[in-house]
Image (cartoon, rainbow, N blue to C red; front, side, top):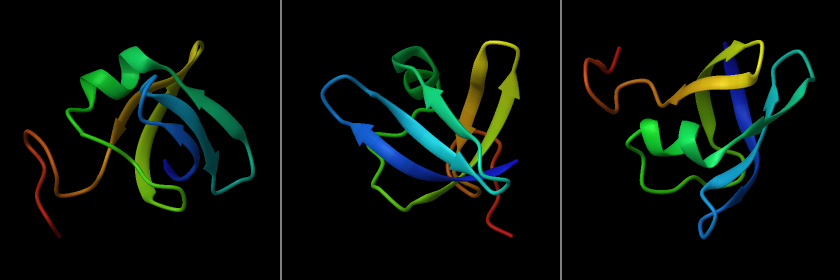
Length: 70
């Protein structure tokens, strides 16, 4: 699923994303830490996976283990 970074606090490593269908979801510190990204900026496009507890995975296409730029 695609989303846009809505808010992000570099100090806490948490924030929110706005999905393409208009849902505002929280990204917690643990999910951000697993992404291997160093920081995010407001308006940045990301890919996410969502589970029962919210965002479970966050990545930028082409960045990180196993990712290819298409």
